[in-house]
Image (cartoon, rainbow, N blue to C red; front, side, top):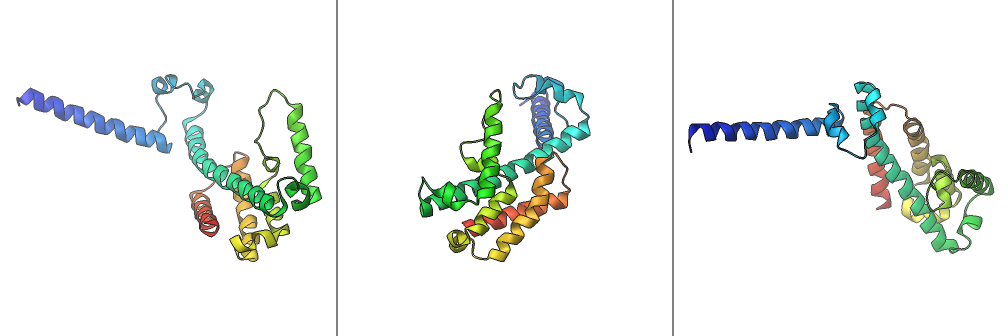
Length: 196
């Protein structure tokens, strides 16, 4: 191999490594995506270019945390619906398994969503129209149906109380500290460990 070929190969290697490092920093939200890269993406909004780099980096970081919250909350909805359908049947789980006040709130929200026909549905379950604390209340109201799985009622009460401020901040485009994010990740892992 001649000297020029060795230099070219070394330069290519360094270029590939630098590109990988920059892409990792972009994925972590620590560096903004170059406009030409963003322009090639059909998923990115050009309006995002109008916001500061700090706001965009923080939004990306919070987006990763939101994904965790989305998975947790929707898996809870699935668990509740599946469990109540097993116990009460697919026709009666909602009427017999959920407090009337909570049902009315969900049904009111569902009706309001149906009135905004230009907007897509929240989901396929009536539970998609409930907030995080409602999910905890359903579980606690029907504790006998969840006790075998969740074990300690006080732990469940504390779980929903502790997670709700973090969930509320995240759902309303708030910012979480690194400590809040770490605590949320730990609490999600705890939930997953308990439910198996």
